[in-house]
Amino acid sequence: MNDERLTPRERIRKSREFAALYKGGYRARGAHFSLIYRFTDLPYSRLAVVVNKKVGNAVERNRVKRWTREVFRRNKDALARPTDILFLARPGVVGLGWDAFKSDLLRALKELTTAKKVS
Image (cartoon, rainbow, N blue to C red; front, side, top):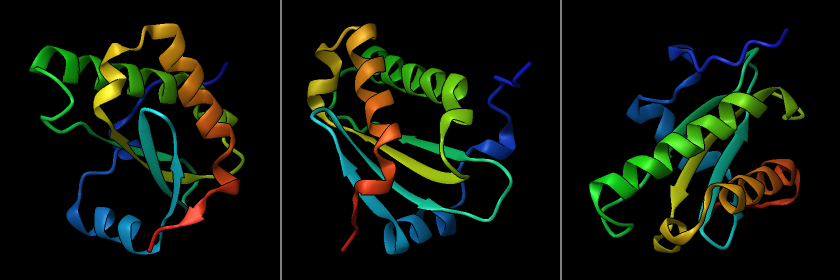
């Protein structure tokens, strides 16, 4: 059985890790969010979620964060290789329902290898 937990080691929290993603990462843009990612030598993938105050009120922002972690947690083994991922929400994400959000994010996660370098 696959481990579907999101353990503390699978979260990006340190500012130097965020800086490394911004400096050496690739960007995949969706209609309602952007993903900045880079492949790592770690044996597992990691995630950070950023939802700023332009997105909505606290309830809406927290829902987006919960949904993002849920999709990542259940599908982290589907990634081709261990990857650090930074999820950046855009204001339109609040209007999405769970099914639309999930399908958009899964599509973006599957297309990570075709994105462009962050400049």
